[in-house]
Length: 95
Image (cartoon, rainbow, N blue to C red; front, top):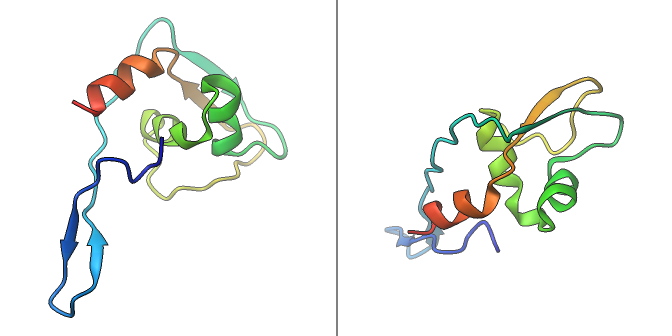
């Protein structure tokens, strides 16, 4: 799933077409969440691939951890929450 799926576009005065900002849902804490400590080389896209089987779902990890500056690589020892119920999150987001 592309992060631009279902994004609306907007035509600017100059004629350029851009994507409108997408607001991701808040992801509540759950007992089923997994917590990891990052190691050298961990990136959000590879973590999404590892836990969800889809690197494009990296936005779930970023949103769950309140990360807005999209660092794809993490410092060693960063603790991240990985929501386990990603299919429910995606379903609710696409409604």
